Length: 202
Image (cartoon, rainbow, N blue to C red; front, side, top):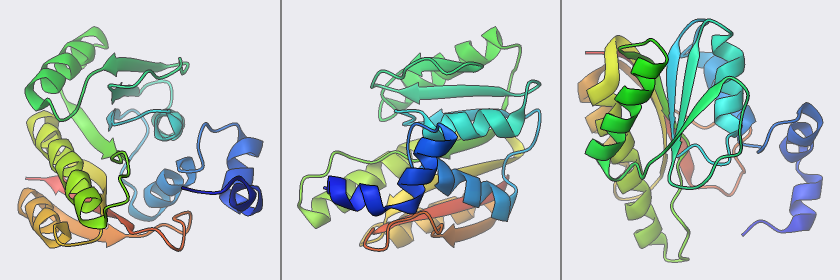
């Protein structure tokens, strides 16, 4: 749990407030996109586990008016101009894939250029269990991405470092031509999270 006093000293929290983003995590995607060029103008982007919507806001800015952003979460997401919201539990993979495909058709698209996920489990305080739940969410994101991405599409997902990290990284590497792990500067120093980036869906 992050203390309110810590947030007040957090430069990314302050920057998010100043820039009007819903969460400080928006800057993680800004930094990932800047370094790895995973999202370009006109892309169709699916944001899995999107609530409260900070990553979707950044994705919308990056794709511009010609692009499409679909935000997916079982939790409510307040309206974001230019972003389509789909209510679905990403661990129910087939249901989510069907719902996203319907949203794509509604937007005049038939494939996805980029799938991103900053999904986190509800933390229990049990490190091993939390790492496993993070692995489950990341794996669901990867499976959904594999079903939706066009060839050469890109993928970004968060996972907690731990026993399951190498297994997840290997799975991404098998499905993408280039795979990297990255911790953005906006990641809190004590955090166990890392982002796995896959470029060039096979």
